[in-house]
Length: 181
Image (cartoon, rainbow, N blue to C red; front, top):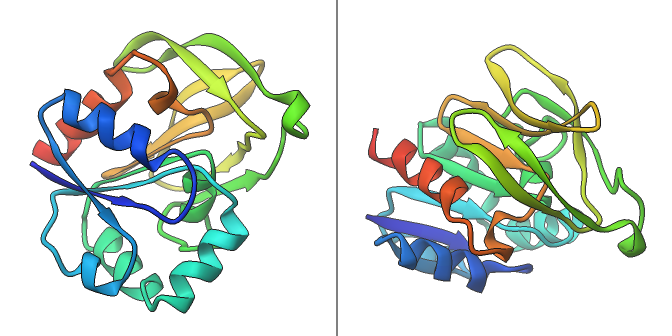
């Protein structure tokens, strides 16, 4: 299974390592030519969402990525990747997001929480957002302290935390199962 990983910022290498551990074949997308390669899914990692959106627009990737997701391409968005899919950005997922909801870098933390369909998992938050509103078709997958930190809509899965920064592979396995379906 071939998984595209948007490699503009953030922990894209860690996502690739996690996907490879699970038997997938990740490849990096850094430009329009990379995006032409067929894939079974897409990972949008963390980073700075405003900069990432500007970069994908400058690279002429915004519309092709949006069209592929709207056409049913499975996608996993983590942290800034979550923000990238919301109504104010790529607009593929019916969610509203509060950026940097937990504060600055010093507000970063790790905890454990229940992830629907997966179980109790470790969650690492780094200048993380959370979801303030779920629209039609979007369902909560996890919450921490009353805030939604993971959701799914169709074949789109988002997390406010970084599942790629630990050893637990279950969120990525959940995503790959979605790619197979």
